[in-house]
Length: 415
Ligand SMILES: [Zn+2]
Image (cartoon, rainbow, N blue to C red; front, side):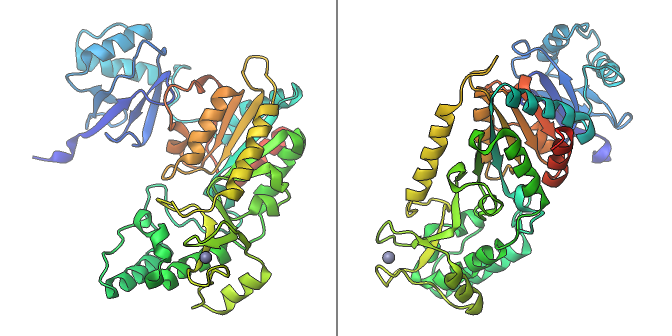
């Protein structure tokens, strides 16, 4: 018997909370093929199993066992509770899917959605509000900073080469091997036995980040000027310093994972931070085997002042200062018409593997006037990291790369 006749799928009532998203697979991050709006509260986050029928690959039958939850959902939508479960359900979804304004088969195109996002920004700006910009790795892609993992968490060939060399060194020392990024990028990588291999990786990351900020940074900065730099703050998970290099003042940037522009003792023997200056960068490039030594203890190697996994060794004085700047900025933003804080949140290129930027954006947006999320993945635009924070009414996903989305926003606002 052919097992491929049906595909198991599921309906999740996660983000956006007022919808059921019908997905092609049973995974919560499976491809979304339809969004069915449902009133919040009534649906109570049911997890409904649906089965894709081989005879009708574009719509969906609900599997037995989901009837109670689905009936309530259909009633709430104004539909008839199904008498014949499978047929009625299928018919209902078909009716809604074909032509109802309340169903969005896909997140809308950039051209369709940029207007509302720009209107949100304009409204906040014109009422004296502020802009919080949150960026992830996607923001630096067009500038040429390599992304070393995909959205599914898979690692690039470059990364696997560093991991292989690192594990070879550990093996020679009779130590266990690191499986992945999470067990590789850890403070222990800088111990003497593997410091050369650790620095091969950080040398690559440091030198590859020495790029000129691309056009999307300039477009973003035009948006910052639209609000006024005193009304803007940038939070980034990137360590490449491109916001600063593109002209955002130092005291307006919080790099939550640290910066490749600073070095610290890997022990650490003290809290001193050293700039990754011209002299350092030149030597790093010229001597591929060089491991920078801590000038204070002359024993441990230096390491970038960048947060790694399980990082109990990070010197966090610079981060604390930036956090303080952000807090003061937040405290200075007044209340808006309908929101607690009159700010709009613009999130650009933040991934789901390490989702700190996405979560932070959602939390800040919940307090403010809107969340504009720029991400080329439909799925990552639809998904939310947090549940129940209440941003669904003011959410503007832009399914596009940073350069396209920011250019479209800039054009819409006549920047
Ligand atoms: Zn030291």
